[in-house]
Length: 197
Image (cartoon, rainbow, N blue to C red; front, top):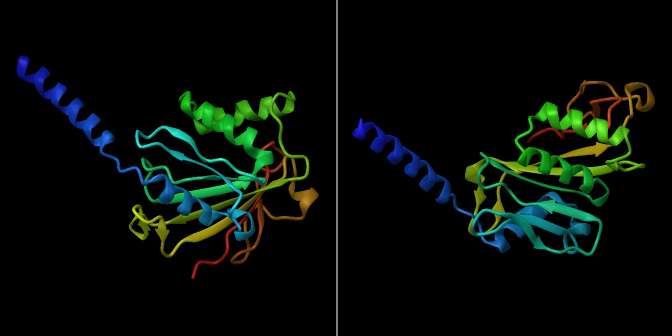
């Protein structure tokens, strides 16, 4: 019995050790790679969120324009960074908070939908863009912040828009063709996935 408890305890320590050993890139590398998702004109003044050496989510750099960027999550597989217009920061932050509470994707969707309709959560009136830049993990150099063979896609949030109000289909009918997801909801958005080389 003692051996069993010892093995269980040892397994727990090994799991904690594995979590603790996740390499967190330097703040400079995180900022450099996060900005790859932003249009060049906004990079110098973009606010950047990332992770401390202990893995805590934090502001790495304050901004001076309307762009906000998120560094790669070192605990998630692959490489993914994003930048978005400040008008959807409240929506994004609410999603992060609910995720931290352990809520599922559907629960987060339903809670934000209800809060937007009740006027508790603000969404952009004129739409706002999210840029997502991804790559395979082996193509990200965590020491330098350089990325090879990355892929950039675009999301334009247009709350409560529909197929009828936009003339966009529910799925792309050609490579790179815009289409609408979650029509008629607070999370309605135009998806633009350029063809991959």
